[in-house]
Length: 80
Image (cartoon, rainbow, N blue to C red; front, side, top):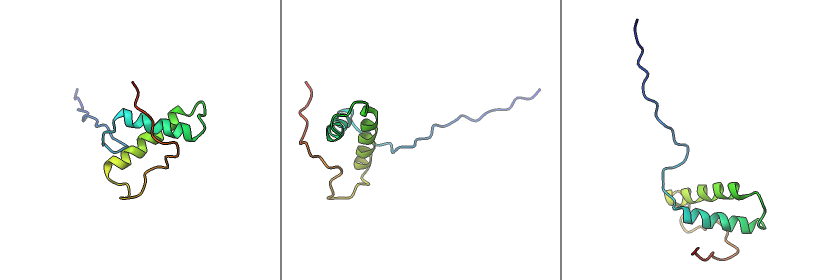
């Protein structure tokens, strides 16, 4: 009998590998939630969009000088 060796599988990444701190994602997701009228059930969508936006910004592909998002409610104070 012969044995067939299976090559090791590599993980593929669909998103850029830039690291975004969770605090920044949480702040952006909170801003998006507020912008949408504090709608119940949007947390996953807001988080995912916030993370994607921040990954683009930190990877350097965002346009220089252009705001990355429209923040209409001001900044969010840090959690304690």
